[in-house]
Length: 424
Ligand code: HAM
Image (tube, rainbow, N blue to C red; front, side, top):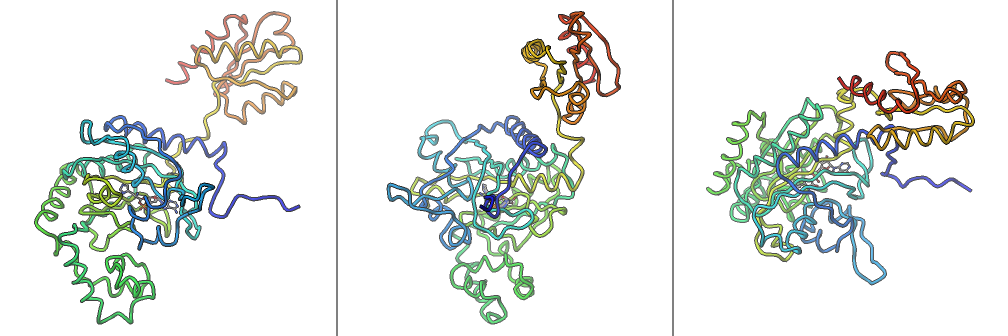
């Protein structure tokens, strides 16, 4: 029988890799704490309508990429392709708008999109997502952009470009859409098939096309910035001025429109120079009409999401991960007959906050030593035959090879003092 493999576009994250994930997620958690965001843990599947109404049913995500199925109760269910619509649903459903505003939420976890897999693009991928709900101030936009950049600063990323644009609002966008249609009308036959289709349904998305024949035309398309209403213009100026004050290096990108329909005013992306074709490490913006689109009252919001895999690929390319997967503090090596003592010692060490592990394979002392070194243990504690008879243990520092034999009851104290010295 043929062995079963993981589905296309998915991957396993195992020891050797999962510590990198932990580092990225813990960094995001630290930033969330420092910026006052509270964690939201939301369902991985939702009613399909949440996404078709929230994200927009002419978007690629909704039209082509959703994992949708009918459950046993006959409901149409979709594996979440992103978190923003769920965040807004949770905010409305749990009455958070009746409490103090704004509400700052963050979350992370798997998302699902049926896309063509390639480096940095998967069918199951993970996002870190930050949202500020219930406030329309441009300073919330500044804070969102700054919090995303803070995550990258803390994990040590460089070679990033922050691009920003305004996609306007329902007041000024129809005029812009019209001026785009006028612009593209004469060169319609030069556009790719997808963009010809976009011409009627959503001409703004033509600006996003990466095909050379379309780019040639879009390069000279009128910029949205020139069509913004006073309010959107003012908002955009405040956001860019706010970012400038923080010393953020941000560039205007007239063609940045984003692939989800809920955006109003600010839209931004952060691109990595070390990712290849799928170079967006982060995307976000303001979505003041999303709550209404999913049946709620008007609630402004702004947020971003960042792909964890893409952060890790960029970190690896830039050598931002120092060293190897961290091992336990101690590996307890025991000769045959000392297993009970080894078990008790690891138990005591763990109770004192020293991470420890031991052998379960009945291996020789030499091969236990090799294993301890392979797993990256900082110290080993040996209970060999001599130590069994003398009631002692030998503690060895794996960094400099120094070792010391000590009474069994003093082992924990010895290791604790060595651990402290190691950390300095
Ligand atoms: P998005 O641009 O669709 O925005 O995705 C955000 C980020 O998720 C991308 O920049 C990328 O890093 C990662 N990503 C997206 N698709 C994939 C994929 N197939 N494989 C790997 N990584 C991927 C959103 O999802 C919005 N909800 C962002 C947002 C939050 N806007 C406001 N609040």
